Image (cartoon, rainbow, N blue to C red; front, side, top):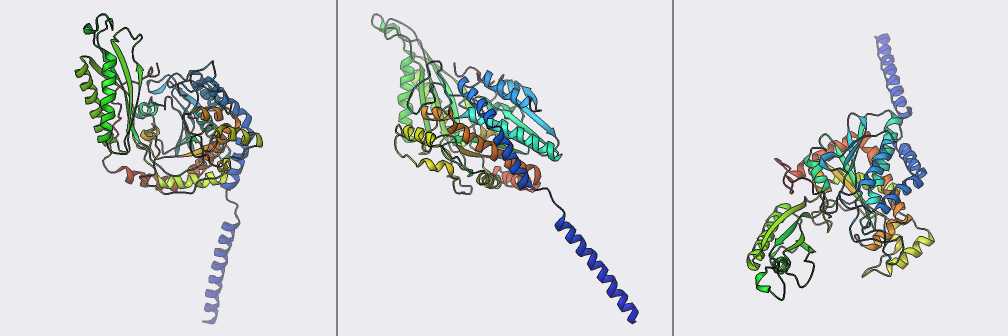
Length: 493
């Protein structure tokens, strides 16, 4: 009995030692350090600063408007192709749209890249208003920075996959005409985002933040009135003014404002009002944007606007037809992804300016109306705020349509001096300097670090998809607000 007892003790002791040995081995075996990988990626991106700055400023100088971004798109495609990406060009019936792919297998991580400029915002890289005589358009929304940072992140993530021999696919989506052209909507409708697990994006701004937010759904249209021309003085009774139709529509639309939900936004510009005062114009056109936080409400408001146009035509003896130019959903935020992205943005940090850049910024701020935040705010990251339906952008974006078919996450990086309004000559000016390209590099690094997390932590994707499906609701079916129309390739003409 004594011998048997000793044998049992010995057996348990050996088992214990083996278990302890395994535990020690697990603790001492060096696991791949993602922090080390992230540090290497940041260093790699920094080493290519001049390269990426040059690409961004080339696109800034091109300043090509929606669906006309031939040189901008080609530059990004070439950059990605030279770094091992396979290019699918001219997708979704849009000559400047593309999908650049690298790797194979799951997960599939998408990165959005925009590159269109805004008409009427020509500006040199100066802190005072100084239009560039050679250009009409300008990058008042910083999309030249957007596209290059996204390409840079895609390239660095491809290096990460290659170095670590990991399975996974990166897709950089070249998305034209975000500014009113709804380029991504056609790409969604075409099914180009099928099979993508997560999509990342970012946007230039005057501050840094990765809070989950929503946006305004938007539907846009050009209302065209046709009348009868005549001598405005000699034979006014023989004419029917198309401009009268436009002005009557605008007047009634402005009356309509009193009877719309208070969070609605409606704005317009007369794009053609005739050519000479003494000729009754037989053609006139007005371009409308209608926005609301909920797309179903938006659709009912847009239907009312159409009735306003019909009434204006009836009252002025003209005929009216309209063309839907664009239409986008409201953004669907995913808290899980936003938290991961913000953590990485904090690791990257904000933007620090040289004394010369600070002087540029202070001079620029002299042209601002209202608040002039401290320039040092560009070095900080906003505090995190969870998903809140009231936390929404005042604008609209076709990224929203992507967010309803794939879990999507984005952030904003300070590429403009704090307080700079978007769609302004001041934003164009900042974007043509290192104030813009420094912020672009913050974006490239944040996208890259978040991509590393997505490729190496499948539970993030799993949790994000579950949250996204719940937020989207059962039975959801994507129906684009643009209907079945073809891309409005000439909407800027």
